[in-house]
Image (cartoon, rainbow over all chains, first blue to last red; front, side, top):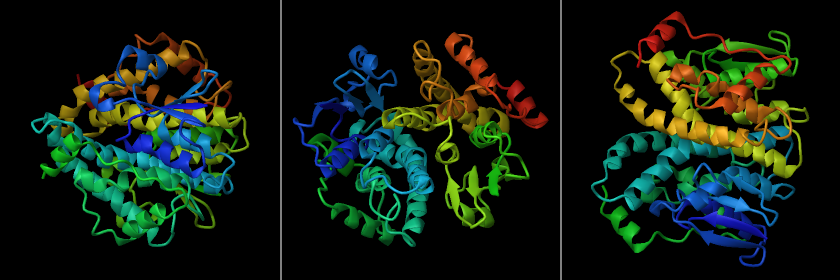
Length: 217
Length: 217
């Protein structure tokens, strides 16, 4: 059985839950989920740092004790040999290219803006980062919009792990303060992802986080 | 022939030059290099943005017009079927895990600190970012050091693309203000990488950049 250490409100963690569901892997039969609330410091305890010295979720652990960090690398491993990561070397590297784009140019803006708005107190000095994150996040969204004008998916010919990686925080970009109205191709793609077989949505933020998000400009 | 659009002072770009050299691919025979100085805005021109809407180097272009962005994805494509990216699905995903770590937890601190010190003017407001980047960069170096206490390489049993990805900015971390004295395992690993067949070092920064680095605390 695979053990997933994850925070349910994290898009990076939800990526795994979504792919596992679409692969037909069942909770508590094929994998177990151990909730680790990174917003409350649970990824920085000595016990967790012994498992992942980088102090981040998601992390997976196999029954023989082997572990793997980094959401997008875990997606690659889970999807190996499945329709979610196919094609020749060029096509698979293009999917990886979008996944590196996600972690470098998208997540650090859109996910971090969402985290600051929902999971830091109203007076947090981190809120000063929001204008810059908004500008850079919109640049990332514009790159995605442009791609989707000529292609239906990010992974290749079909839906797959690069779409799962980019869907995670794009679908909740509104919680980060990003209005997706100017991006019709992204909105259509989000709808296509939601319609894929076995899709499961990310749970809504806690009432506390939702209230913070609602009260942030 | 592969066309590489790259900035010679960029570690992300040098990754490709190093792997191409180690694969025996020769400049101006197997690939051409087009210098794009990202520090002077050359990645943000309309002509370059038409090639890579994300406005970053490196970018590769094939003779049939296909292009690929993201240094670490390009490494995967170049190394496919070679000894630089081997192993089973788990091992290859572990190499990818280190490459995602590099782009998320290492490069945005160590490479960005180096860029700010060498390629922004002394009075740049970006210099206020340096203390935070230094703290987070040392966290990334500590994660690497810990790994190297029990394994000689990041890619797997042997040297490969995850080592190339992490070597790029670790080898010039001093230019970013990072003293590697507390990391003996990293220093040994850097020496092992430098001793691999076909290794080529990154060129030193320009005199102007070197002077800025020397005059920064």
